[in-house]
Amino acid sequence: MGQLYVWYLGQLDDYNAVADRMFELDNKRRGEDFTISSASVSPTDDLTVTVVNGGGSTAHIVGLWVINESVTPNTHSRYDVNVFIPSGGAGVVSGTAPYGSRLTLRLISELGSRVSYRIAPASEIPNLRMTIDASPPTVIGSHDVGITLLVFNDNTQYNALYDLKIDAVVINKNSTDDINYTYSGTGENITLTPPSIANIASIRSGETVAFTWKYTIIDAGPGETFTFKGRYTGALTFATETVEVVTPFGRNQEEAINEVLGSLRIQISSFRWSQDNGVNWSTGFSVPSNTNTVWKVEATNTHLTKTIWLDEGSALSLMNTDTGTVKIFYIIEYPKLPPPQGRVYQYNGVNSDGNDGTADPVEIAPGQTVTLYFGATSSGGQNQQSTGVSGTWASFIALIGTYNDDPDDPFGQSIPFIAVNIP
Image (cartoon, rainbow, N blue to C red; front, side):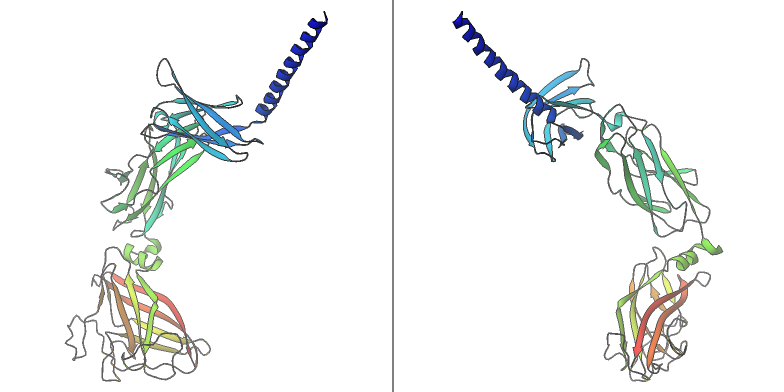
């Protein structure tokens, strides 16, 4: 009897040790808190699963199950993995899965914890909500405007959708002509840049992604409309948005561009002045007083399609900030030696031979940069203007002329410039 009792106590000790061990494992397992934050499958069947560990200890992932729901009966594949994810950290579990399939993924830890995650290709979910934003609804031609296609993952059947792609954008001019693009291209009156991104590897339920382009409308008339139609691959319908070409202030389109944006861009860093007819050019904005002076600066024509012709009325002006006195330096072709005369500048189309005091107007092609000179006392004159008396002088440049040498297509632009100190 005594031997039986001792045997019983030994068995009880073993049982208690096992129970304690099981209780300890259960506690550790309850302390595990890892989740799948995203998952995607590439066109080459590479499966990528991102895991986040919110528990208080390291999680050891030892198994990955891939259940293919796109075939009947469903197939189950198990992969041995060996991934440690520290507390508060994230890790990646890799495997293989058939691209284009709807899948259930299941991860198993060394302690027996498991999490599941369902994914599907975005192309198989045809009714995600979309909007397209081509703000502003009215545009002026010849400058870039942004366009954004928003795709909302409002599907709740799957935790995430993978490989969300966008189709080619369709642009419909005046509701009649479709212009199709493979992400980018040039069509009648419009150019479209490639999108910032063309596909998203994974989008979780409740998330939104944005695909953006830039477009430029060229030489379209007021009242013409452009409708943008975009969608993701697999969508049944398009998201659409229409913009209208306008000309503000009742002016024609080219004048409106000039008013709102300005076609010429001045390079301030190129500013120079000379008081010896261009033999030496000085930098800086401190200029000796009451001395004949020629100024020069570089200008770039930013218009996409039209050449700018400047006439002899273009000028650089200095205004004394204390007295209001104004000094005007009219445009010249370039400094002429011997002094004191700057070379005459006339808008008469007569070719200059370098000696007769006549010159062609300045012609600036689209995208071209030229050097502008200012120094005459009068429009088309030969006498050189001198700087004013001591003080601070505010400067600006007024440029007038035409587009493409067409009197019916005038150009004008006032450019805030620099402040000049005359000691």
